[in-house]
Length: 90
Image 1 (cartoon, rainbow, N blue to C red):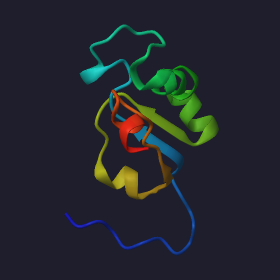
Image 2 (tube, rainbow, N blue to C red):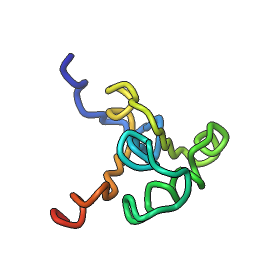
Image 3 (cartoon, rainbow, N blue to C red):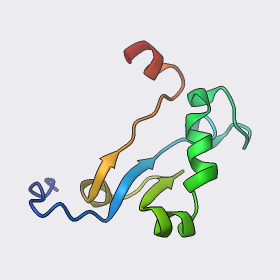
Image 4 (cartoon, helix red, strand yellow):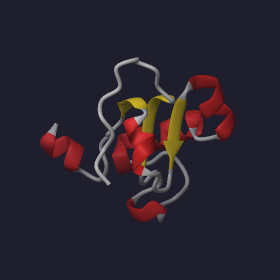
């Protein structure tokens, strides 16, 4: 489906959203801070990867796919480095 029109009221369901690999490609790496994503994704998961953190901070960090409409209702969408692309493109 096409994305909804931009929001004019600046009311967001989440302050920041990230969804994807946390522990390496397809989440198959060790569940510890590692070189994958320069450690950024793991640190975010450790700090904000729980339902209570999401409710308290407005930050949603998911290690799985989330529905498209969640992205459209977020003020910021995070795209931290993965396995090298962020270094080459950034």
